[in-house]
Length: 334
Image 1 (cartoon, helix red, strand yellow):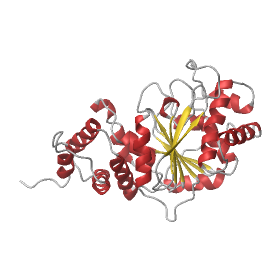
Image 2 (cartoon, rainbow, N blue to C red; image 1 turned 180 degrees about the vertical axis):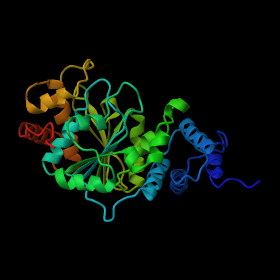
Image 3 (cartoon, rainbow, N blue to C red; image 1 turned 120 degrees about the vertical axis):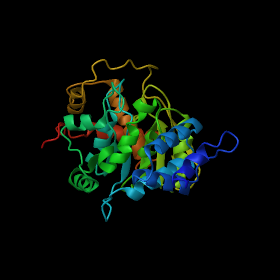
Image 4 (tube, rainbow, N blue to C red; image 1 turned 90 degrees about the horizontal axis):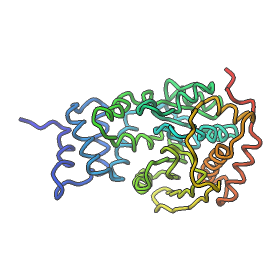
């Protein structure tokens, strides 16, 4: 019986501890493009994803999966311009998504921000799509429409199912398989408009080297990775933040950003009311934690964009932007 064309990729991962190896970038690229084109069987996909999870992903695999995904995306030609790619796949359960305000501040100051993410794959979390809709922001129904949103207001959000319905289905396998799959890692790196600056939020410090290594293999001009609140691209102001940055194919450099608040622990937000983001923006409410989270995250973004030299200058620039914000912006007028 002739082997299925995809079987070779399962075999590479499943040969046992002494013979298994990581997929090369090109192997991973081919494997993911086959999966997303419907050229692999469900049994193969399940085995493939769980063998990867057991082995743990290598940078070559994450980079290859990213390229394989880009190969099948229906991307506009020419590509719309984005200055920064901001992924949002984790959701928030302890604190509101203050990073959204950081991204909107960038947009208000002329930076074109493309945000993309998934929603409702883990119960009990608030996701970016529902938050943006509550703030009056439209969600793009295609990558072409995302380009139009960037032209209109320097900000666009594209849900993962819009970019790739098959990729969304892979992410939804977590409750069925009982474990997260590599999709949760490489979806963050899709960067559909090839923005020169990419931000990455991670759950665990161990993923920093994997994401930085993948960004280097992708020759990403700038990629800044840090352990964010809840796994999102959001600085935790009550703790020091180590940011690993790669420039193209160079080695990762690390920079430690100091904690902005004295207290070492932030109690969870019991309300998780999205309306509180509007009140904070409008100046009707105040929270030292929230403001520090917004400005601290913004400072990291400004530094990655090359708009501030050094930690102190970036934080000062972020605070100035916050103080000068258009308080009537939220909710966005239709």
